Length: 432
Image 1 (cartoon, rainbow, N blue to C red):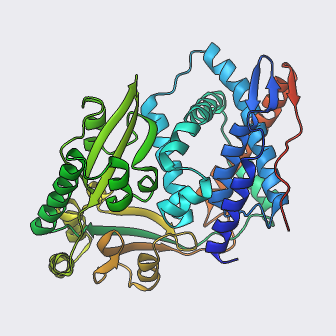
Image 2: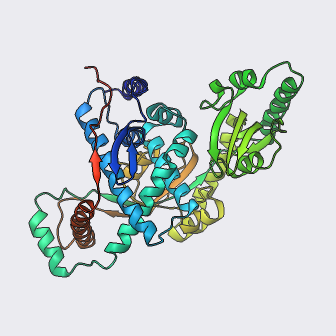
Image 3: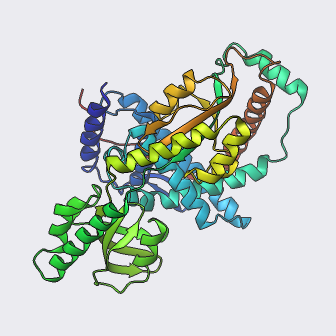
């Protein structure tokens, strides 16, 4: 199915879900409940990631609902036990996991806008709604990880696992040990000044009551997720926004239109409507700073000069540290990981990685992120698993299987010790 059609179908399904009484109880665990709304929210996130269309694949979606509900039942049981043992999860770990989940959904969807369409809500609203569930998920993972930490496997266990499952273990993919250098295309001083002037002009119109804030947002804001809501961002917790924006919304006086606030996205006009503890209700207008063809050419010339200076991997490693704008990899030689091209999400880099000569620097490659140089240090050929070639992977599979078997036996025993009621999972009739 065309992906755009898939998204439209998913939006129609989500709209139909609004007709459900979403606060009905999906399950009861002792004196705690699992709400249908929470089950649906978690299921929609999984369905969006897996590109499962509820209209065309209702059976798969129902299984996702059932799995989501059962996971929440188990989480309630494990959370109760973990809290008794004083296991804690830090807020920064929750934020990191939420951001990673959102990044995965955006990568699968193709853009932030399509991700929000698939989820049926803004990313900020999704993070807020899903935060408690993510805390429970991390708490459950941390607790069960502590319970299985002492489980290990022997050489004989790995051989037995391989002999038992070798016919069902899929072939391993070819992996490319890949490094990159990224130069972002940065706007010129003139472009920055133009966006600042535009932001100040709009601010004056609002202050002079020539335009309301909401109308100005709808007309001028470059944030597609909030402009049609008059710039309203909803109630969001501290840490949701980029640092410069976050600092302003938690310090500025309420109902005061700020001076233009600069972030990596451009200039924002911000008004805080309400603050409650660590949450804030704010609205904004984003004036994006545009890059020009001259900016692109300047960046290309710079990265091409860097490319010409690289003769070996040591040169590449040093250049990544000195020049790369990718802060997640520039201190590690630009290492992107062992990449499986079947699942890699950047088509321009994917094409280069598949054809580049090993241990040579690529020509500059343009993507939505900027210009890249690629270095493939090693290619690990895939194919059917063997003990000789895939020992480490098979050892990890054996260990995971042993831990999973232990967990399943343990959780079933725990479930038998608590009162659990599972109500029918009702969701909209899906048209054929």
